[in-house]
Image 1 (cartoon, rainbow, N blue to C red):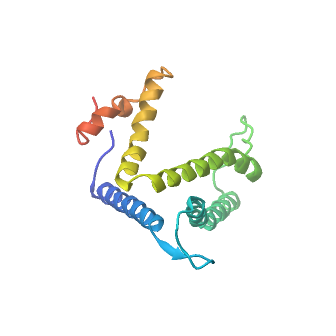
Image 2: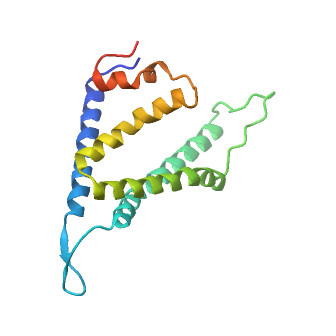
Image 3: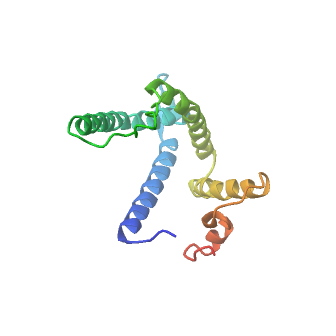
Length: 175
């Protein structure tokens, strides 16, 4: 079982605060009113716009990814030229790394589903209270664990064996 130190507590609290802030900000965005091109006041309710803004914000992670890839490639060249250990033994052929295109194609399918899920979640937030939306969003993990156990007949790991146990006693570890 993992440890819970001060750093873990700070990360958890920052995540909790950031998630709560983002949900409230999203709900406030849907309660805004502004004059349209025709001069009449309209409610601002475009869920696709908010999903696009989220997607745009996440795309700022790409430069960090490319910087990490550049650094890894630089370290690999440095270790090869300066007598670093070879990644493969003489008996074992070197493993083929997937190309960037293959990696992007493999990641495209879950990314599209994540984008669709984000659109549906923002659409749900438009029509429900923020508190109910947060409960349903958090409860999704429990429902998935229950379906995995009872529908797919797949045994859960010891940490996920009793997901309902954590709803009642969140600090008591599962046996």
